[in-house]
Structures are given as structure tokens and as C-alpha cells.
Length: 297
Image (cartoon, rainbow, N blue to C red):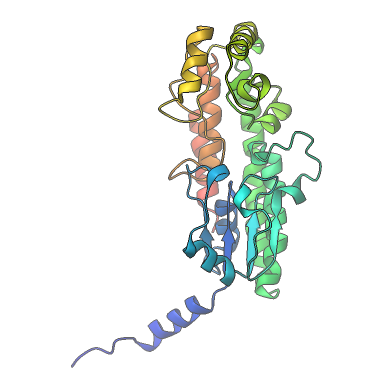
């Protein structure tokens, strides 16, 4: 006897899946935060994949279609994704970072590098998600939000402990562009985004390169952190001129590392920083944090 194409149970599952609301999480770490909060109760579409550059993203026809169907669109804000400024969608468009951090004099959009701000962003997303479900998921969202806040609180404590292993004179983070001002402020790191600070309009004149080299030598850093591998031509020039090597591993500034969660990316960044600058990283406790985050359902 031939089997029916769709059983009653399968039909129920398909109907439930098709009725699930669509939420678009655009940039930064919002994809991971949103998926954690809703579990399988919504269709979460992530416009920018981990490892991609949100500053230069371009909307594809499929992206515009998903935006038009979305009950809610979550943006990082502070112009992390310039092409999304003023974007229209089927539901509200919310700049989560601007709710979590209403005052940002440097306009650094990379807010989540401070775990306390990542928790504030989580709380803001949770509040905006509840109306999507007309109140039916409030308790479940709050339960997951509380578990996420707990992990992020522990991540903040862990981060401070790792950074304290770095000699004080070497707690300096040299990159090309500003992306770690919130991390630096929270944990007593000196951030030096050399291209942003010294290059005029992003152009690397000989005078700019000379000023950058002097600043790097004076900083006490052991390495310069590239924003990607292989390092850009500009970062290679800066390393050669200053005599300070480029770190063998990049830091992930603009969101999650490919295939990694928010917590995996954060702990990976901190371990990369402290080891390169002469400190020690407790990878066992990092793995415990990662597991706690992964177990939230």
C-alpha cells in the first residue's frame, strides 16, 4: 500500500512551521541573540553571515523579500550597516544598540564587546519580540533571557580575570579602525585605532605612517591586531614601518566568527588578545561558558 505523501502529524508540523512569524536579525550578534530567545517559535533570518563585513553589505532581492515579510526587523544601529539606514519592512525596524546604549559619543557601533551591553541588547530584543507572539511566549522568552543574562554576566567576570594576567603596560589594543572602545573602557585597555586616529580621510600619507609608527612604538604593545587574514596592505605597511609584528590570529570585530556563537567569539577574541600580549587564557572556563550558552533552549 503506498504511503500518503503527508501524514496528519506531518501536516500539523508543516502548518505550524508555515504560521511561525518571520523575524529578521540583520547585523552584529543579533542573529545569535534572537535565535536563542525564540528557540523554534519563529523563523529567524540572518541577513549578514558570521565573518562578513556589515559595513559594506548590499541588499539582495531575497533580502528585500524577507524584510517585506518580517514581523520585526532588528538592527544593531549606530550605522553598523549603512545600506540599511531607513530601510522599510513589513513590521517595526528596531535599532537595538541605540536602545541599549542611548549615549555613544564616539559612535562606535561595536557595543557587544562589553558583555554587560550584550546583556542589555538581549533584554531589548526580548522586549521587542514579545508583541510578535501576542504575549503567548512571554514566560519562555523571559526564562531564556534570564539564562542568557547569567552567562553574559559570567563572561564579563571571566574577561576581566583574563585581562588582568596581561602586564599593565601591555594592555593595549592596536587595530586599524575603532571597534573596541566599549571593551577597552570596561576592562582598562588602551585602544589605539591607528588608521582612524592618524590617517586623513583614510589615506595613508608618509606623515601619517610616521606618526602611526611612533605611536605604536611608544604604546608598549607586543603586536598589532589585523582585522582579517591575510592582513591588508595597509596593516602590513604599518607593521613594517613600526617594526612591531602582526598578530598571528585576527580579532573578530564586526559580529560572530564563522561557525561560532556570540560567547565562542567573545572568549576567542579575549584569548587571542591576552596570549598575544603576554597574558594567560583559561580555556577550560571559557569552554564552560560556551557550553552554558549552547545549552539554553
